[in-house]
Image 1 (spheres, rainbow, N blue to C red):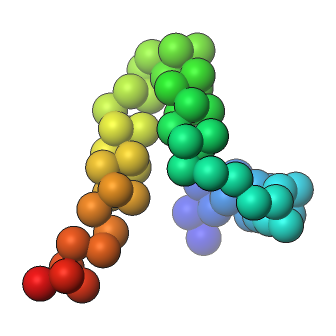
Image 2 (spheres, rainbow, N blue to C red; image 1 turned 120 degrees about the vertical axis):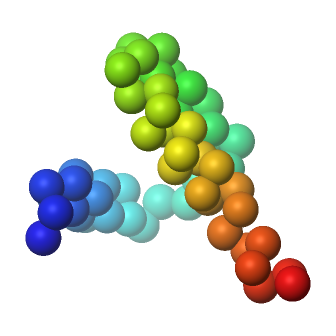
Length: 59
């Protein structure tokens, strides 16, 4: 188990039943980077990965 799995598990346990829009998620990611600028690159990579998830399926 990776260290980050604990945070992911907490997210799933606490908020797993909620539905949110991608716009809401984008705003939370922006807020997080504003408060934690050292994480700009990992958040950028995550956002890009999420945005491109279905690219391989379209080809």
